Length: 342
Image 1 (tube, rainbow, N blue to C red):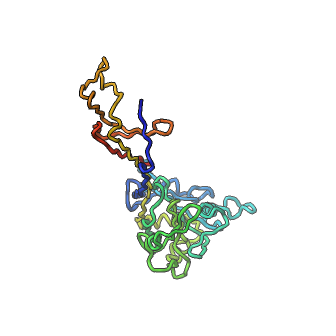
Image 2: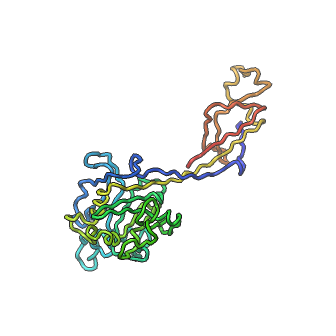
Image 3: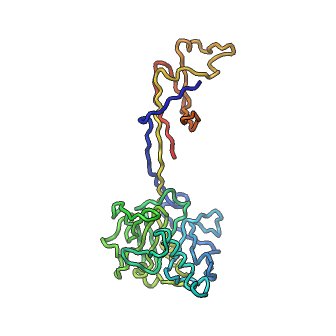
């Protein structure tokens, strides 16, 4: 019959480690190539996908069928400017893809469709959104690793301000919120969140736990007024979604890391000298029931190869295998550390 020893409280230790990896496909640290698929280029219909978002790939999806989406770019306008209304009937006028996008993200962040995005107390009418594909990160994106470069007519380097704020964040419905600012590696350039001369607030907000960035479209216009347009639905000017894609593609530099928390539970299995020295393994006896190794009669010896973890009903839950058999007799004791990751 098996013998079970209960683990004491001091025999069990829980530890949590953070594993940081690059967010982009194949462990790429800085995303330098940006592609869209050819079937996303139509803005003609009010319900066309391109009016809501563009999927951005690392590889050319038209040449590589295995290309993976890295993130999407969207444009939202509180009043619905920038895309065709779904219908021109009565109260439905003004409801369009851009208004849906704005409503979608404020619903996520604020939990309602009445609150507006405010950037250091400045509330613009429109936003740009970069939403990292869920498959590209584990538990969350790592604050302080955001380095986003945009090139329109001018060049802008953006990061979050998690290092400047020493990790302090505003907590929202979807987790932590940091400001997006001019700077690098989580450190803001200068001392003011209002980094444009017109005082249009910070450049955006970063939500690492939800995996997206909301950019202040008015601040982008104030920085580069001849490139960023408000409410443009003109395909010739690449529309608002296309403006962001073009600025990213021209810059060829988007750096972001993924962060995963791995919890480990350690079970310190203590084997005292008087325990587990006998076995019911049939290989120890011959067909007559005599010991195959006669010396075991006076000096019983076993070889431990496996540690089983059981619940209170003696149901086997997990098995740990030793790298090599561990000799055990009345003159020896052992300590086996079992580690479970989850």
